[in-house]
Amino acid sequence: MHAKTLLASAALALAAFAITPAARADDIKLRISASHGPASTYVRLLQEFFVPEVKKRAAERTRHRVDFIEGYGGSMLKIADSLEGVQAGVVDIAGYCFCFEPSNLALHNFQAMLPFNVTTATHSLAQARAVYAKVPFLGQQLEGRFGQKLLALLADPSYQLGTTFEWSSVADLKGKKIAAAGPNAWWLEYTGATPVQSSLVEAYTSLQTGVYSGWIMFAPGWSNNKLYEVAKHFTMTGFGAPTWHGLVVNVNRFKRLPKEIQDILVEVGREYEALTAKTNDELDERLRQTIKANSLSFRELPADVRADWARHLKDGPRKRAEELEKRGMPALRVLQIAMEEAEKLGHVFPVRYDLGARH
Image 1: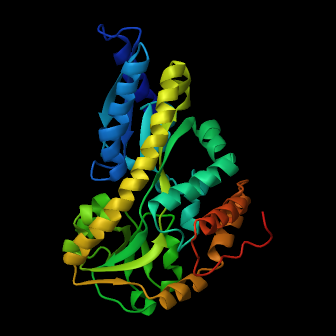
Image 2: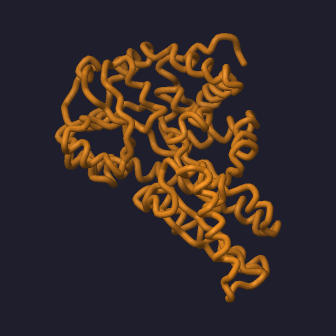
C-alpha cells in the first residue's frame, strides 16, 4: 500500500471520529492493530493485558476514558503495511515483526545476524533491551525517520527446524526448500538448502503441497498452527530467540495525548513486554511436548553438528554488519554489545563471531 493511500485512509478515519456526537473532550480513542492473529502470544496479550490494563489505569488514575478500536490478523494493516501504516497515522498503535522490514529496519533485526544466539525469550529481551539502551540510534531511527515511538520489545522463543523429511546431517538439507521469515534465511547458506521467504498464514498449505519442505520456526508457532500434522519431523537446532517484534505508537498521536496517558502507555508497555517474554518461555516448554507427541521424530541437534554449522557461518555476522555500516548504521557496535550481553547471561556461542576491531 502506498503512503498516499494510507494517508487518505487515515484522513477519512480521523474525520469519522471528529463528527461522532457522543465523543467528549476527555474521551480518547486509539486504533490498535497487529499483523498476526490471536494465536500469537503478543497479540493475545495485547487483547488480554495491554488494552484492558491501559483502560483500567486511565479510569483509575485520570479524568480520561480510553477506548480502543482493535483490529488483529491483518484486518487493519497487512504484514507488509504495518511500518508505513503507523507512520501515516492509519492506526495509532501497532504490533508487528521487524523481520518483515528487512531493509527499513535492518539493524532492528540484529539478533538474526547472530545465529545460535541466546535461546530463551527472557534472555533475548534482556539482551535486546541492553543493546537499545546502549545504542540510541535504534530508537532515534524509529522516531525520527518513521515517526513511531517504541512502547515494547517483544521476544519470541528460540527458532528450531521442522521438516517433512527426517535428516541426520546438514548434508541432508542440500537441495531442499526451507521457509524462513526473511532476515534469518541466511542461516541456511552453508547447508545448500534453498531459502524461501514465507509467513505462517501460508505455512500449513505450503508444507502440505510441497511448496517447501521445512520451516525455521519456534515451537509455539509450529504447535499453534498444527504444522506437525503435515511436517512430522522437528529438530531442536537452537538457532536463537529473537526480539524482533515491537509495539509502537505514532509519535504525533502520542505527543497529543495527555501526559498521564502517555505515562500509562509507557508503563503498561514495559510490563506487557516482560509478560510476553515470560509467557513465550512457558509456552515453548509446554508446546515442545505437544510437538513431540505428534511427530515421527523429535530430537536435539548434536553439539558437534551445531558447532560445525556455526563455524561455516562465522564470517556472516561481520559481513552483514559491514554492509549496514556502509549505510550509516552502527551495526558492528550493536553486534559487539549483543555478544557481550549474551555472555553476561551465561550464553556460550558455538563459535564467537569475529567482528574485527572492538567497537
